Amino acid sequence: MLLMVGLGNPGAQYAGNRHNIGFMAVDEIARAPGFSPWSKKFHGEIADGQVAGEKVLLLKPQTFMNDSGRSVQAAASFYRISPDRIVVFHDELDLPPGKLRVKTGGGHGGHNGLRSIDAHLGKEYRRVRLGIGHPGAKERVNPHVLGDFAKADRDWLEPMLEAVARNADTLARGEDAVFMNKVTLATGGVQEPSGARGAAKAASGESHVRQARGSQPPSPPASGPMAGMLRRLLGGGDTT
Image (cartoon, rainbow, N blue to C red; front, side):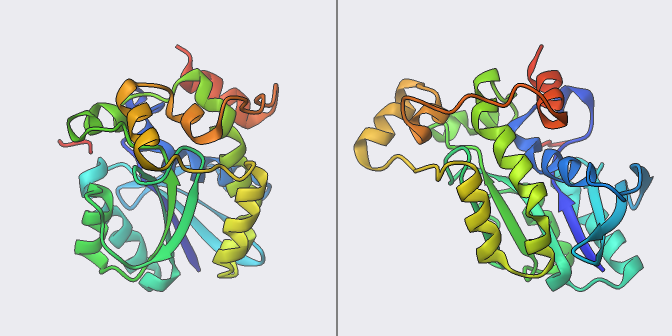
């Protein structure tokens, strides 16, 4: 069995936060045919199904971000899932919006959800780092991650989440490089701003989506389940 975990904070007030992009990713995976409805277990919400012939348990911890490891450990212990069979989707400040990376192990980078999982299970699990961009100053990090995605963010957010779900089979097979390439192609190969120019744009408050994508981002799809969910989200303990 493969355990796929999305990190976020429970409650309607956090649903559209950048910090909840992990929840959004597993929600989209759960829309695939054959997945069960969400139910409550392991201090979280779970859904199960199959991806690429592999039995998959999806988990959204409901413990708040800084205690995510308690939920992940409960599920992993019950099903005897080793860390190398766990994939965690989480927001990543050090990647521009729409950029994605997969890695195994490493530090938590100040992310309290990863810090908690490390403390409960060790570090040798796979992380899918979903870029949300950095606000440009340390004191602006908390308001940034706990702030809602803007409506303009649908330009990159919807295609990325749909591509993550559509290519989850490659993750299930352990083909991380293939997964990254397919998602990158689906999202138009977002490029990161570099040097002083990128830092100056961040300080000026210019949209990080436009910094990352350039002046002509693609139009978001007009319909579909992901579009509907994002319209609802983006319309109008320690949680980090």
